[in-house]
Length: 312
Image (tube, rainbow, N blue to C red):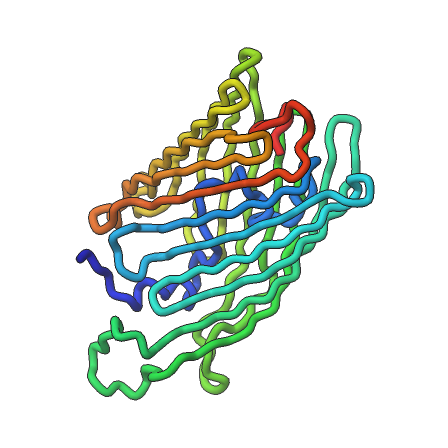
């Protein structure tokens, strides 16, 4: 079985690098990246995402996200929340956050500004039999389960125009220590992440919609990352998308090419799957990444399906 040293797999939680959840179908669950999105669509919506990253590598990241949001107070306010579970090697990270967004309407769109307090449970199981110490009986390696609770807060701004959208966000502002030892030199902290997203929908015909969009991700002391996506909707029912993900290689040749296929199965249920084809050096050791998404609209406006006349 293809393997990679397990310690390398949870180092992103311990060092100065990307620490936030990465997933391909960001356009269908923007609340997980930006609290300003809360309540931006007319209907309450519930979204579930499962991601299996770098399949074939033992201990590679697996992510489950459950997200809910809705407008209230005559669409002046949006509320919502996310529950996520991420496992990488011996590390598990459970995050609960709630989102509050207040919006201001303009002649051709609306601006929402949101806050998102969160609680995280960081857990590491040092009794995992997959751990093999390079030096036997190394006293510096823990021998039990360790955990820590972290509180934080994020912010975001999201603007929705007649046929375009844009957003900026920082999911966690406080740089909490994520060392388990309470004494000694501090080694690792949570790193501030910044997200920028945007997209625009074109309708060359009544039954066809094309939406190019981008997600830019930046963490302090880490390389810039970006997803460049083009989506196609036919007859307000059949969806296809292609994403090119930057990063991964030192020569900036990219990390993956991602293929997405979805369908509006019913008036309220949309499902989508994607397969990420790795193009970085890591692709030699994995079978790519898989992701599945299901979204339920509780009370969708009549005639609106996967892509409304304005991006959401």
